[in-house]
Length: 392
Ligand SMILES: NC(=O)c1ccc[n+]([C@@H]2O[C@H](COP(=O)([O-])OP(=O)(O)OC[C@H]3O[C@@H](n4cnc5c(N)ncnc54)[C@H](OP(=O)(O)O)[C@@H]3O)[C@@H](O)[C@H]2O)c1
Image 1 (cartoon, rainbow, N blue to C red):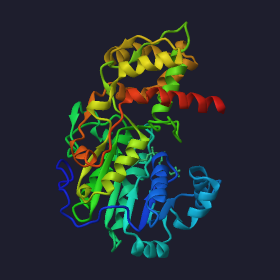
Image 2: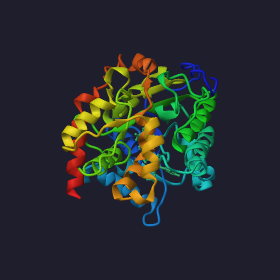
Image 3: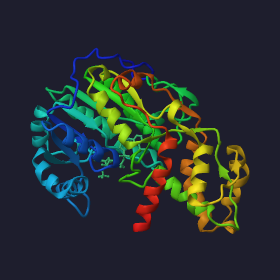
Image 4: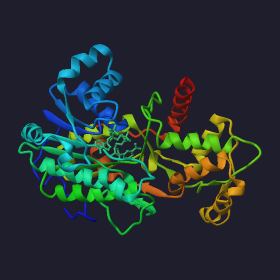
């Protein structure tokens, strides 16, 4: 497998289908990781989990996992499942992932499946800071995995936005084609995926690239209000006033590839269950058939919030005319400050990326996993967010 441009090679390295007996999971305290944890506990009763979790200034890793179990499961279930969950204190950005070396050697001997989901997902970090978690963090987990004699699968959660500033159709086998990046997140996830592809030349590996993960398609439920939800919050705060009408720097025809978390988890586990996924890279995206344009979503958003749709402005006009005005201290106010913070999402309003998912569909169609269209759940997401934020 060529680490830069070539597709992974479809099962050339012996590995196994399905969730392992002892799964080492990173990122379990996060949005996607907690759903992965829940799915394994609920549907793979013979699997045990070792969760790599860092302590914080206020809580130990153990306390964080106890809290996580109490959030994800009912009280009785959390107690019942506790013995299947082992807490490994660590930090992916540190050498040896910050694990105690004796413990790490014993763990490496037992683990047969790694799911590496942890990452720093902020768009505004300096490159060297993002690299610590994403590039070096992934390198540390790969080095740990190399020491596992029983390793049957290494599953890595990447991102579709390793595509950076490319436009048009992006294939699952493509990675580095000389694209540039909108932020340190995209760049360091690309660097990390390169490392995973190289590792995949020697070990059974699969790579998954979600797009913009949002809440549950049936209920709207989510455990995070970052990313998409923060962009919605910004929209409300910037455009609700009547006196200062700011233009919205969006290409109305750009597809906005949202993907609901229940679909991501269903698709991930269907792929893990298939030996054919080994050696592959898969877009866990909505793709061309299930994605709305920015204009469609903004119309729904305006209708839901009652905030009048602002006029669109081109990227060039925004940068050349609007941005300099926003930068002028004379015009400074709270709303403008929010508008400037919202600029981290601008690249995604212009991206025109279409994530081809032929390889994922070749396995998921057979497993009966269908991608719900964004039109069917978008308002549910907004309803859930509105309710949850009103309650706090
Ligand atoms: N959400 C999306 O829209 C989206 C889209 C595409 C791809 N992805 C990918 O999906 C994965 C999960 O993202 P998410 O949305 O679930 O993010 P999240 O909610 O921010 O969770 C990130 C997880 O990574 C852990 N982590 C970060 N740095 C760490 C470190 N140095 N040591 C140990 N753990 C560390 C966090 O632990 P703490 O709790 O200690 O911070 C947390 O558990 C990432 O790889 C991301 O690139 C997400």
